[in-house]
Figure (cartoon, rainbow, N blue to C red):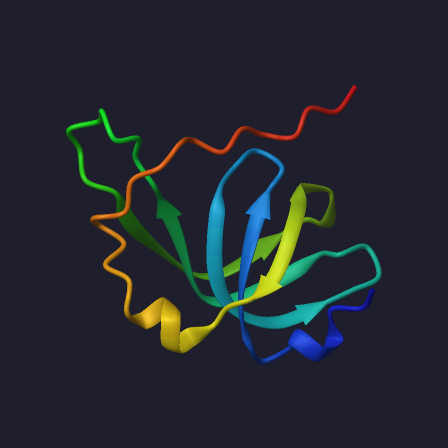
Length: 98
């Protein structure tokens, strides 16, 4: 499936090492290399962690295709209603390549 319909739209990317990134997809290619603008990494902490979850700004961001596990559109209305500092959850494990 081509990601071209997602260009200039807000997407969420799960990486092979378990990171969660959101941003506006500026460009993609046949190898699934992605260029995101206004990129934010969401660091979701487990319930037993005293530190709050956080969003870390990265700005313009390139993700190599071999590191993309999932890419999907973000429902911006719903996303805007969530206080990400209060979200808790299990850590997403990375993708193991053998």
